[in-house]
Image 1 (cartoon, one colour):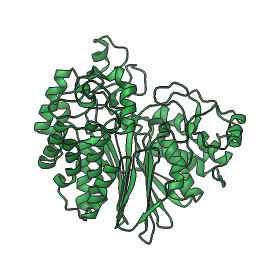
Image 2 (cartoon, helix red, strand yellow):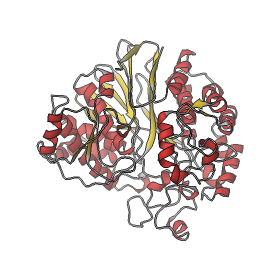
Image 3 (cartoon, rainbow, N blue to C red):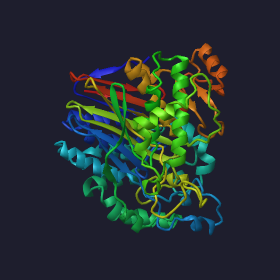
Length: 530
C-alpha cells in the first residue's frame, strides 16, 4: 500500500510517472514550481494522450508565500463561425461528439503555459521554455509505453473514433488497438513541441504553427480558423475563495465548476461533522454536493453571460442559509444529469513554498479524435458542452467560453500549511476534492490515506446514464446500508479501486519546510521528490 512521501527539496505529483519525473528534474535544476509544472504539462500531453493534449484547455492556481494566489484561465472560445445555425444548416440537432464538427473551440492550454512562464519569471525563474519542453519532446520523438488505461479506452471508444481524421494513423498500430507496453511515437508532435520551445507559445496562435493547424482544421471540416486562433489570449485573474474553520480554500471562477467545489466544502464545514468515514461524513458531503450542483447548473457559465456574481454563493450569509436545506438524516431525491470528462490533475510545491495546482484536458477521452497531420496536435471536443437550444444556459454563440468541469484547488491553513490538490473525473472532480480535503484537513488522516481511501461518486459515469450514488467496494457494508436507509440510491461497484472515481493527488507544505505528497493508486502516477 502506498504511503505519504516526504521531502524538503520539492514534490511533484502526476498521474503518469514520466510527467512527475519531468517536473521533479526541473526542480532539481533550480526551477520553481511554475516552471516544473510547464515541463510536466508538456510531458503528460505526450504520455497520457487519452486524457489530455496540447490541443486542449488548462487551468492553474499558482501561489507563493506572502502573496495572494493567482488563477490562470487557459480556456478556448467558440469559433466565430460556430453558432446554432451553423450546425442546423448541416442537419444537426445537437453538436456531434466526435470528428471535425466537435472541434469548435480554440485550444487554450499552450497559452496558459505562456502565462505560467510570466509568473515563473516573477518568481525569479530563469529556465528557458525550450528546456522545459525537452522531456515532452523526447517522449514524443523516441516513444513511450502505452498504458493499461490507454489500451482500454482506445478499445472501448474505437467504434466512434476509428474514422476520425488522423486518429488511426496516430493511435492505432497497423489498424489495431495497441496493447499495454506497445511503443507510441508521435514525431510530428515532437517537432511541434520543439518549435514552441524555440519560437514561444505565441507561435501556436499567431505564427507558423497557427497557420499549419488552421489549414489542417479547414481541410478536416472544423469551423475553427486562423483568425480564431489569433484572437485568443489566456488570462491571469484572481481565484474564488471560501473561508472554513482553520483554512481558506481557492479555486477557479466560472466558466469552471470551481464555485461548486468550494461550496461543497463550505457547506459541509458548517454542518460541524466530527467523525470521518461515518454516515454523517458521507451523507453530509453528498447532500452538500447536491446543493452546490443545483446552484452550479442554474448559474455557472461563461462569466459574460452569468446573472449572478459567483462570490455571492460563497458568502457566509448564503452558505449559512443554504446549509439549512440539508436534511441531516434523509437524502434529497436526485435524478440530476451529470457531466462526463477526461482530464489530468498535477500538483507541485518547491523548496521555497511556491506551488502550482494544474489541470489539462481535452474533455472526453481523446477529445474530438482529430489529429492534425502537419503538427500532430490532438484537438479537444470541449465545445460539445454547448447547446443548440436558444433557451439553454450554455447556448452556443461565437466567441463564447464553454462550461468546464476543470477546477484545480489550493488551501492555506491558519497554522501555516499550504495544500494543492485535485483530480480528473468530470462530474466527480468536486466530490473527490471534498473527500480528499475533508479526510486530511478535517479528520486528520495521513495525506496518502486521504487519497487512497474508498471514494464515491454521485451521478453519471463514463458511458452510463444512471444517476445513482456509486461506492467503491471497500466501504463498510453497515455504512452502505445506512445510506440506503436514508434514501440514497446506492450502487456498490465491483472494484476496490475504480477509475470511475478519478485520479487524485495532493501535496502539502508544512511551516518547517517539510513537504508531503500523495498519488492515486487508481492511476499510473507517482510522487517524485527531491
